Image (cartoon, one colour):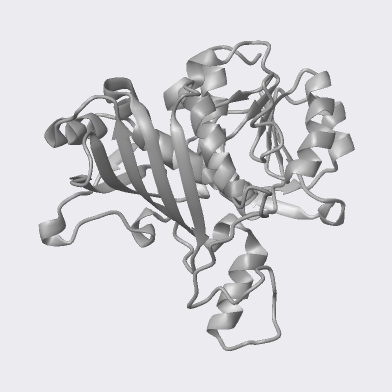
Length: 331
C-alpha cells in the first residue's frame, strides 16, 4: 500500500506522521507533499529521509490513500484529481464535510457507512469529533433532544503562526506574529473562523451541522459558542445535553467507561477532571464533571477534553485509513 501525506510540514501533518509511527501503520511507499516552497526539502520519518514532493508528482504516482491536511482551497482543487486516479482521499479540511455525496467519518461511530466507492472521505471538525465521541453512545441509549455546547479551544487549532503569536505575546513582544484580531495571551476570544449573517461563526455552525450528519439525526437541536483560549494542550467543551428519556448517572458513567476511545476522569473530591494539559499528546477523549442539570428534566452536564491535533485531526484521519485497510476497502 502506497500512502501520501499532503501538508506534511504543518502542525497536523507532523502529527499525522507521529501517529503513523506510533500506531505502526504498514505501507510500502510513503510520499510527503507540501507547498511549492517546501518541495525538495527533507523530512525524517522512522530514521529514513523523505524528500518533499509536489502535488503533480504524487498525483501521477497514484497512491492508494492520501491524507490531506492542507486547507480547504487545496483540497477542493486537488482531492478530485487524486480521486480520478483511484486514490482514496481522507481530508482534514472543511471542504467536503457537508457535501451530501461525501461521508463524514468518526470510525468508532459511523465507519460502517463507508463503501468501496467512497474516494473522498471527510474528517470532521476537531471540536465536533470529541463531542460526538462522548455523545454517540448516550444518544443510542437515551436519544438526544438538544445540545448546548461552549468550547474553549487551543491555539494549535489555528496553526503554527497562532502558537507563535501567543508565545511572543507571553515574552512581551508587541510587534510579532499577528494571526488573531486581538491579543490571545491572557485573553479569551469568542471568535473562531469568520462570522456569518446569523451572528454565529463558521466554527459554531460546523458543530451544529456536522453533529447531525455524523449521528445521522437531523432532529437534534444544537447551539454552540466557540471560544479561543491561550492553551496548546487540547480543546475543552462544556456540554448541556437534554435527552428524550431519563437517565441514571451511574449508568451514564458506565456507558462512557465502556466506550472505546473514551476515558472517564470524574473524581471531584480528589480534584480529578479532564484538563488539556493532561490530554496533550493522547488519542483518547476525556470526560468528567458528570452531573444532572437540576434546572430541567432529562438533562446532563458534562466536560469533554481532547487533544485537537490528535483525535481531533491526525489520529481520526489515520484511524479512517486503518479502517479502510481492515475492511479491505483499499487495494
